[in-house]
Amino acid sequence: MEKHSSGKSVKESMVEMTELVMPQDTNPIGNIFGGRVMQLIDIAGGVAAMRHARRNVVTVSVDKLDFKHPIKMGQIMTLRAYIIYTGRTSMEVQVDVFSEEPITGDKVHTTTAHLTYVALNQAGQPVPVPPVIPESKEEIKRYDAARARRQNRKTGD
Image 1 (cartoon, one colour):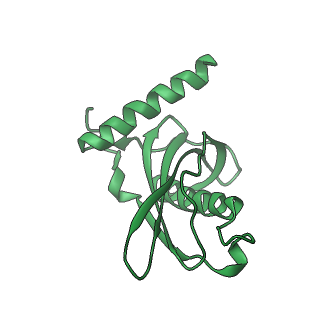
Image 2: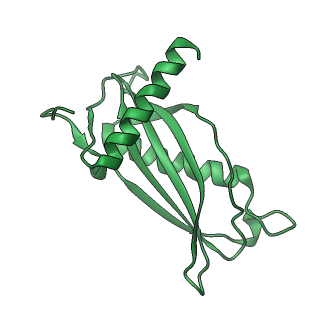
């Protein structure tokens, strides 16, 4: 991928959030509510998008979201969000969620989500965003996968 002088690297807007799972966030069997996880995913993704665009952003879509492992009360939850693809006014953000057992330090990757945000001006109209510059092999792989997802959305597949 060719470098663009006004582009930004993935690490420039990366967000890491950490939460302790408390009783008010859990269901009767002690697992965190899926809606609470989705809320935190949207917050982490939105902050990454705002950092990248340096604008207000709105969530326009959430791709498939699977809860692969439960996160239990008392565990530490970490969310990592980073821009993986940019269009003209939109940004795709990947958010990975991990649980951590505080005593042992054992970590489990529980969820991955892809969200799309659009940057807005003060009048609430979409505005262009800087391109993201993937640098590592993993960043380029995520960029290419996001570009394919975007193309599939456009063609209706």
